[in-house]
Length: 114
Image (cartoon, rainbow, N blue to C red; front, side):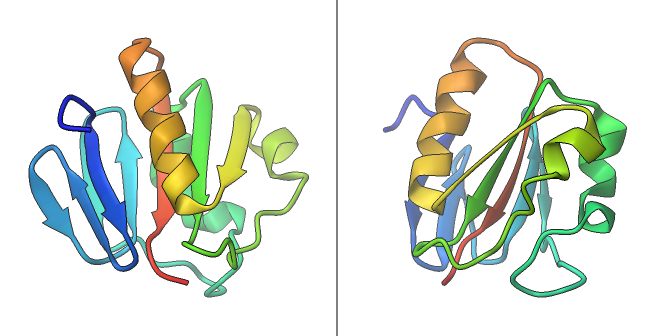
């Protein structure tokens, strides 16, 4: 996937725009915020997404880890007033790249382990 913004993902590693990240990340279109830390470990709460809320994207893509262990509450989309899609991280990377190429205002929050 060399023409993709997220170039590669494997357990514990994500290559974004030529740089390797080994911690969870938030993406705001092309901006990378490394070391995303959640208040409740393997569960996303609204307080974990302040940068995303400030960015005000049309769509938020959440990567729930390689095996999808991170939980995303169903009501998150309503509370954030934006479309929220969640997938295991490998699939979430592909979806982020799809929307990125369509020039949509997007954000991503990716758990890159479990």
